[in-house]
Length: 97
Image 1 (cartoon, rainbow, N blue to C red):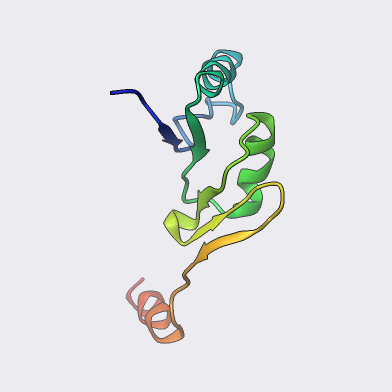
Image 2 (image 1 turned 30 degrees about the vertical axis):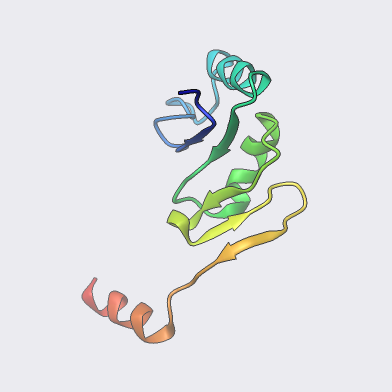
């Protein structure tokens, strides 16, 4: 079975200890894309912090941010999915912590 999609986390996966994508990782992603594999990012980070890395890696598909709470296209900023916590749930979480 051929790999069709790779969704990679950023911290400790795409990014090294200096918070950069290594040349080796960039090359591996480029080769996968050349073979028709869709590569995206899935992270707990906010969308705006994902965009520079998506551009660096030539990711032309939506990226997943906010732990799955938002799926958005990095170049057009088109929103594919967005789900936030309601006010009551957010307040209860704050109370717990």
